Image (cartoon, rainbow, N blue to C red; front, side):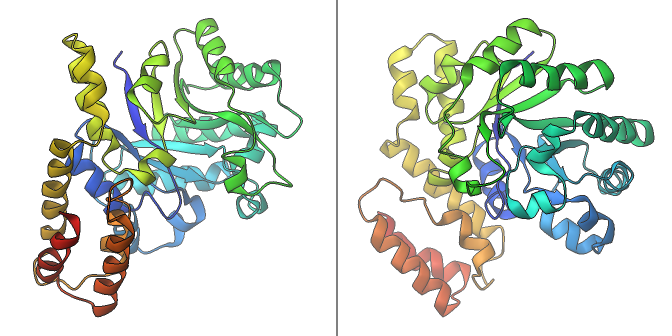
Length: 332
């Protein structure tokens, strides 16, 4: 079983265009779409759905949110007919909006319903959902609770893949942003359950930023990266490069491979150029196109000026070719 590196699902981040740019730089990363609610899939026009989800490839997972087994099954069937083959159920989002729909992290309090969802989808479509979960929710934060949830799903459904955000979450009192920071990381739960269930696939999410972080969790089945990919959309290219170097035993170059050196930066610029040209040289810029480019200067000299210029170019609605000509003076 190969070690998986995945892009976490993030609302307003892992858009179709963001994932398009990630894929241009990394062929192996498993990419998650933004969560899409099952009712939206069922009622939205097909062209709008395709525009929102973007191009299908074998390493893209559509994350679905919902709590109605029948509706989720219908949504999966619709998505499958559009070409998508991998699907994930959101059992980890703590936002109040999601809670009102009785899905996301609140589902960890109802393992029976989660089991019914997984089984309904499998019965109707033959698709086996993966789950994105937390280590706990509210006061239910013991290892016994976490293990009991996973065991129930494993023993009662065909599901065998869990993406675990290694933090508990609070459904009240903390914002989604605070729930990504305030509860302490609990890697021990994930490593412990993997040792007790070696045949089940566990991918760890939370606090992964460097190759060294990835290496620490190499006994798991993979890692999922979220916020670090917001700061650096090319992190997956760098990790792939580091992992390739580590396989040949070059530990010095392995560490260097992750750093944003000049070679990496030149690669980034070339990839960005290909990304922009893919929309057509005469296409006018819009926010959806340039959103993935906002942080490409993160940590480099001129970052502030670059963002100012980016906003100005967007305001002027310049074409792709004009943008490329104008922006390079601020990048180099």
